[in-house]
Length: 295
Ligand code: DO4
Ligand code: MG
Image (cartoon, rainbow, N blue to C red; front, side, top):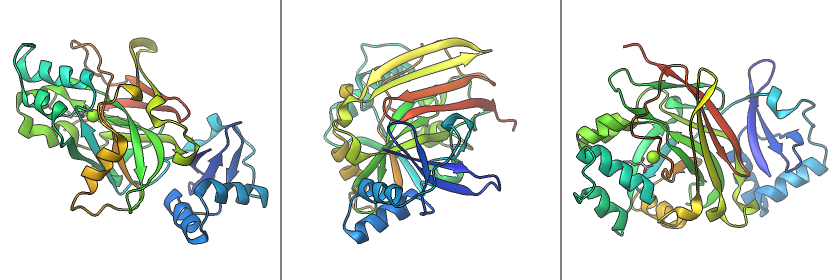
């Protein structure tokens, strides 16, 4: 079972359940975290509450998923991100930090093996876009890529409520110049996207078996393609959440992106008009077009 949000004919958000056989039902709650809180109060799981609402007559949405204007599946108040959680990311960070000298040991090697993971602040609700919306390219970077990542949707008590897809847009030149520039390499207007759905955690047998694919289309032609699996992750999801929450209060519906394992070739940079597709098995396809920001 997945949860989505779409805009109705008056542009108001509607929360909806998307069943495994692709039926869509409008739900009475305004957002996913309200549904999770209500389920908690009733002492049932979110899935059980949704199934009860469907059985009791939740309105079927009579149009296919493709014809809905999807929104972010939730208004995540904060998006955090873990970094260097896959070997592929460590190697790519080393490449940009050393200018390709792969025999030089760096702090990226250190953090990959350290007990404490890298976790950084990535985005706020106002900077985060949903499916079909534009992500932005910084005007002062000439080496930009999408980072396709599994996102954990976390409740205020640290429980993983569900999984979504996320794009941690990144500037390799800015981070490579100086790691202290990380916030500028990661955070600007519309530099993060999430969606298209949240897969309820209780419906996932093994979260280390998600298949992730990224495709970048230029002028309608496939320019870059890569695949990975969460089975390649160096860390455990609970471990990342526990470091995020260490001496830190998190808001209900916080999203934690879990790092990238797909990096385009080193000579690739995103251009205005490129369409980025991030597909995660059992979640869906998050598609956004990159647009250059004009300063
Ligand atoms: O150290 C920089 C961040 C790396 C990152 O975002 C990732 O591994 O996904
Ligand atoms: Mg990342």
